[in-house]
Image 1 (tube, rainbow, N blue to C red):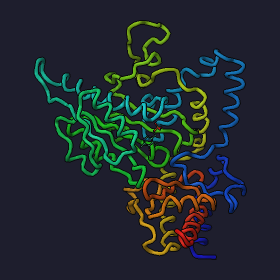
Image 2 (image 1 turned 180 degrees about the vertical axis):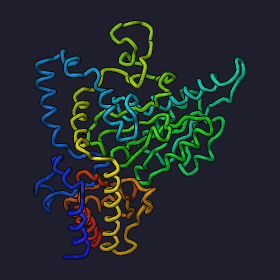
Image 3 (image 1 turned 30 degrees about the vertical axis):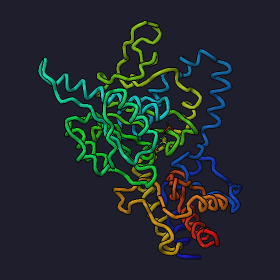
Image 4 (image 1 turned 180 degrees about the horizontal axis):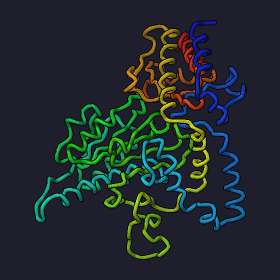
Amino acid sequence: MSEPRLRAKELDAADGLAAQRAEFLLDEGGGGSGGEAVYLDGNSLGALPAAVPGRVEDVVRRQWGELRIRSWTEEGWWTAPERIGDRIAPLVGAAAGQIVVGDSTSVNVFKAVVGAVRLARSADTAAGPVGSAGPVRDEIVVDATTFPTDGYIAESAARMTGCTLRPVPPSGVPDALGDRTAAVLLNHVDYRTGRLHDLPALTAAVHAAGAYVVWDLCHSAGALPVGLDEHGVDLAVGCTYKYLNGGPGSPAYLYVRAELQDRFDSPLPGWNSHAEPFGMRPEYAPAPGALRGRVGTPDILSMLALEAALDVWDGGVTIEAVRAKSLALTDFFLECVEAYVPEGRVECLTPRPHGERGSQIALRCPDAGDVMKRLIERGVVGDFRHPDVLRFGFTPLYVGFADVERAARVLADVLAEPGT
Ligand SMILES: *Cc1c(COP(=O)(O)O)cnc(C)c1O
């Protein structure tokens, strides 16, 4: 047995999270052509937690099918957005009462960015003496390397609020800030390269400029500690179908820091966020608290599938333990790639220092699309990002070290084949 294979055995034997894999429904010898598939695409769609199918069956057949409308109150449908938000909260370092679940990440980016611009302007008005004009905050800074939807929505938010959009690479953000900056939209982890950005330092820089920051946590929530409260983050959004395993299209979430909730002015003030939703009043009056982030009727089926999926975090699984294993998995993957793949064949885009690494490894290789196709045929599932990136996501709750070794070995085999 090769050296990396022995190491994998030792690492799996010492893995305190190894038992969590049983909480998920994964292949049992049936996936791919080489037996059980190695699933390294949990950063795109998390695997199915075992508790979900039974819960969804109950929600559909009993709650909807039998109780029907009574379930809004008797089964807690109406309060699900806040209740499930409170279950996500500890995973991102937030106290209760600051997160609501609902709508897509894209929609929540819109609420948060417009909300941040409005906060910046209301702060200027509130701070200055009556009649004085504070600085005109008319710029939105956005991560120039962002996942496209965030950039598209920031551009539209800028047009709607009369702001100029300034796309800046995250390292250039501190220099781009000034007294015209209203809001800054940043990604905690870069979806392509897996680079982890410095949330505490960037948040502090935005605050020093008197602006408001929105963090997109899509690639960090459920994979590493975020510390929203600790670092004074203003607003944050994230999806739940990646490292939180909520299922395809499961609803996203919005965090609004407690001290800002009274001033948070949502650009989508639907009836679900009204102080008295069943008062059916013609005038809008926002509810107090995080539920100001709600819009319309929640998507109950996928929301309750997500609630069941969050059960995997019960029973003492900590985000710190998950982070430690995530770093061990990505370290080991790089080690195996170095051992198996001829030098120069792939280039690692993910930073080596732990403090700059998310829970994925991105490898650049010229024929990446074709290479990923062949990997998937052999039961190693990652994904391809245009134009030349192989992405491998490591979800510590169900990926083991033997999976990592096999993925690197199959990658080396595929790269050695003629035509690649
Ligand atoms: C996955 C992801 C999204 C997804 O947005 P949806 O509205 O759920 O499609 C948005 N932003 C980032 C950074 C992502 O990684």
